[in-house]
Length: 114
Image 1 (cartoon, rainbow, N blue to C red):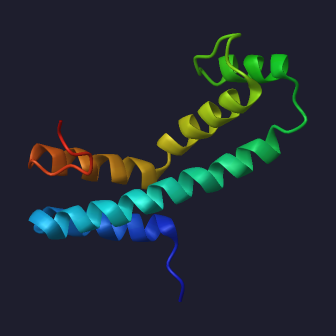
Image 2: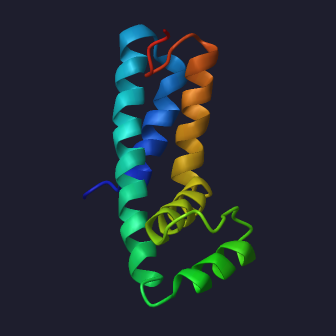
């Protein structure tokens, strides 16, 4: 049986509290890749779903969805922001965010400190 990206993120998030150091970094990397993949997949879906809307209609749809946007944003930016807003509300994205926040509290982060 093939495991979905969402299931895999849940599994990685569940394993994270018992992981330390390099093992935790590896789990974060895998989860981050799945997070990015999920966002890209949803971005394509949102772009296809909103394909027929004009830029003005996209702005109205953004307002209705409670998304901040302004006239300086182009169509592609509005679609990407819409996809990101939708993605961040998915259980997989929330699990990843919690995983990353918990790891950061333990001093583990994918972005090196400068």
